[in-house]
View 1 (cartoon, rainbow, N blue to C red):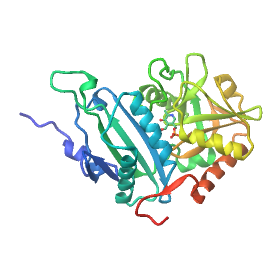
View 2: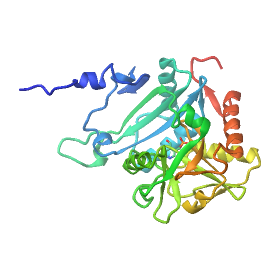
View 3: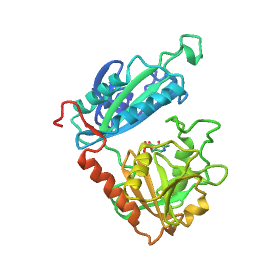
View 4: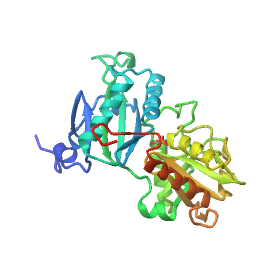
Length: 314
Ligand SMILES: Cc1ncc(COP(=O)(O)O)c(C=O)c1O
């Protein structure tokens, strides 16, 4: 039999993979580049999985309890169960980070449906699989984009409606977001926000959105994942006495906003300075945006709502 030409699986996914970090799979810790799950796990062949991502900054987990509680809500909603308690999952995440030696990390916990018994396609019969990994901190926006603000487009691709998939369950159904990303690049933008069928904006690939509209911060209340960074911003805005409205955000209102920013575990608070080719406000990161951004990182430096990685000095 002819061997297929090109790299072998080993060189594609093995020790040469462009990833570093530590994974937990099947009860063992290993280099992330060497970690794998079976191809026929329903998580891979049917996107039948949920996950969550918490970050570590300067050796401290940010809001770890909140992230693990959200992961549990997602698993419960998908009727998944794992043979670990929340405390055990936290201990595994601590171990992944400690063993990786990373000070700033992107830490993912995942539950896949698993593999059904031979001859069955019954999701109830699958043993759900818990895996986790820690890798270097991930930024949605690169350094230059964070400094000058992101260029965003409102996509023609609609976000999957909540009636089909509850967006509060963190999931791998990302093809709407991925195709919206391709469209954004074609429009000379860097990231898309996806509207719902009513023309309200929802979210984009890996982030929530806020607008400063008539002196008030507005963030959507429907059709999106309830981000923990979004929750953090709502709390920080209260500290800064900025009024917040959680409600539908029509794309037309977004187009008139004085400021826009995105929020994500992968990068915090990211200014947007162009929307569909036009300047947002003065075309530079806005004052409210930067006040929240600076407070977010100051709170990180102060150790607010954070816990040291086990084995690290407190
Ligand atoms: C679709 C989607 N929306 C919003 C967010 C932001 O959520 P968080 O602030 O908890 O990272 C994410 C995070 O990964 C996401 O995947």
